[in-house]
Every structure is written in structure tokens, then in C-alpha cells.
Amino acid sequence: MRTLLLVESNTTGTGRLFARRARELGYEPVLAAADPSRYPYAAEDGVRVVQVDTTDPCAVLAADIGEPAGVTTSSEYFIPVAARIAAKLGLPGPDPDAVTDCRNKAHQRAILAAMAPKCTVVTSVAAAVAAATEFPVVLKPAEGSGSVGVLRCETPESVASQAAALLSVTHNERGLPVPAQVLVEPYASGPEYSVELFGDVVVAVVRKRLGPAPFFVEVGHDAPASLPPSDETALADTARAAVSALGLGFGAAHVEIRLTPDGPRLMEVNPRLAGGMIPELVRAATGVDLVAAQVAAVLGVEPDLRPDRRACASLRFLTASSASVLAAGDTVAAAAAVPGVVQARLYRPDGTSVRPARDYRDRAGHVLAVADRPRAGRAAAVAGLNVLREAVIPERETR
Image 1 (tube, rainbow, N blue to C red):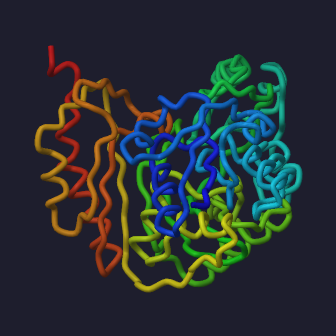
Image 2 (image 1 turned 30 degrees about the horizontal axis):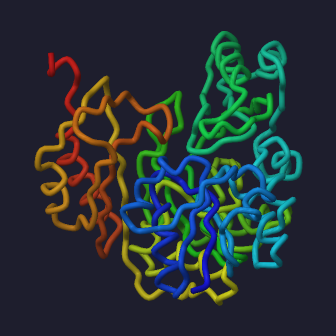
């Protein structure tokens, strides 16, 4: 049987769906991983795993991976490696140099300066403080995802503290080196959206719900975004222009934009499918399966991007308001029984400690709801989340 090579995977969200979609298309998934223990789903789903240094395309190609018909990844960190392997094998995929450059936000902003807030790239604490000429400002690492390290700062002292913290990080959670660069930019006010592109096709515009400042944790999504047509067109045009300027255009792109009083301002472009369960949100709202489309594209199969429904889907993440412990009981089943809720999940076992959310890793579960109208979908998601929230027990109540 022909195979689909998956170079690592994300550990939450849609990771395991890539393997399932490959099988549905008649291909056997093979997961290349430096540490197979990261992926319990592989054993649960019978996915063959090859242990190899996945930072090195040549090492992966020399491993026992068979003769793949396609190569991809659901992990932000391994997009360039997967693209280089595909290119070496003459298989469909994005331009390796374009996706490598895109992952660096400093490089992105240099190309997209006209579309994004003014940005200063610094390599020292002193330079970060000097760059913060008006407040509030936002500091973020040059590479990363899931809002890790992104902070709104109100004072020079907070800028210095955050810049020092970011510059002290030499490797990410996968052990990959990160550049000693920090982006300092003025805070852009206004609601945030993501445009989910596939090639140059806008599959969905999603409204993003953010948690409290100073962090930028995504605590929910709504699809469709329910915008006036002129605003939706402006967001779509901005996303397409950004992807084109960066030399992208193969497969999925996840483009984050703030709709400010002065119009759309680009936050960042990600040369991949969205995280945060957005592909499942989009599938619930439109019927378009973005994971299946990405798998099909790298296998050289024409992806199906035709919507077959017009529903309103809302997703809300479970987070803690104080130091807490998870105790599920029957909350997942109860949340799933709320009218309109189609999915309720907890991500961790009972007894796991949960802190107030600073980035995506602090989300403890989610609820997905679907309805005929936006307001009904949002209300169902909130109602389901309120039930699921009973699984989060403040530590002070456990003493």
C-alpha cells in the first residue's frame, strides 16, 4: 500500500486526523518522530512510527519510511523539514524556502510592512525598551505558535522583563533552536479574525475570542464570523495579498488579522492549517474538511473545497480562573448533552493541575456547538462550557 509520511505531529487538536484521512483516501500513514512517546494516538490507532532525527531531512529519507506518495506535517515546527523532504522526492508541497522564511515573524514583517503594525526587531533588552516609544506595546518571539510568549506590556519595566524572558529562551519545547529576536510593536485595537485559505480560496473567515489581557490566549472561535460583506471582503483581500507576497499558495494558510478602526492590520501568516480545533469548527459550519484537503493536496489528489452546508458553529475552550485541579466526574457527558453541543472534551486526566491560561497549553478542554443561527450557536457553546467548567476545581476547595 502506498504511504503518507507524517513528519512529527501536533500533540493536541487535529494531529491524529491526518492519519485517519490518509487511510480514508487509501493510503497508509507513517509517522516519523524523534520521540514516539509524544503521540499516544499512534499506538491507539495502529499508526506505524519510525523513530528518527526529524530535524534532518536526509536522516528521515534514510530511515525505513518506504516510498511515500506524499509528505506533510501537522506540527508548526516541522513544516520546513516536510517541505524539503517532499521537494527532494519530487512530491507536491509548498516551496521550502518560502515556508522557512514565513515561520520567522521578523522576516514576515519586513515583507508585509504595509499591511501590519509597525514592528521593531530587537536582540537585547535595552533595544526592546528603546523601541517601546508608546504604550501599550506587544512583545512576541520571532518564532513560535499558540500565543506562547506573546504579552501586552504597559510600562518600560514590563517590556524589560518580558524581553529578558524571551531572549533567555534558546530552544522551544521540541528542543529546536530559536533565534534571539523579539518583535516590539504597538498594540492594535479591534476584534481579531482568522482567514482560512486553501491555495487562493477563502474557505472561512473565523471570529476569534481572546482571553483577558495581558495575554492573547484564544478562548473561542465562531464560524462564520458574521461580518458585513465589506469587512469580510477586506479581510479576505488582505489575507490573499499577504500569502502571495510571501511566496506561499500551496495548500492551507492560517492568516490572523485585526480589524482596527483604520482597517485590517495583519498579525501573522502561518503556512499551515489552523490550530485550536479551527479545522473541525470549519467542517461543522461548512462541511469542508480542511484536514482531508491538505492530505489530498500533498498526495496529488484534487481537494474538495465545496461547502455542503451553511451552519453556525461556535467553539469555546475550558480555562481556569485560578490555580485548579481537574476532576471530570460526569461533566463531559453532561456538557455533550446540552442542546446544540456536538462535541465536549477534556484534554487531561483527573488530578491534573491547571493554571490561568497564558497560552494554548493551558487550555483544559473544549465544547463545540452547532446551530442554524450565530447567536444560538454561541449560546449553546457557552452553556456547554458552563457545564464542563464544573470539572475545574479551585485548589483552595481541595484543601
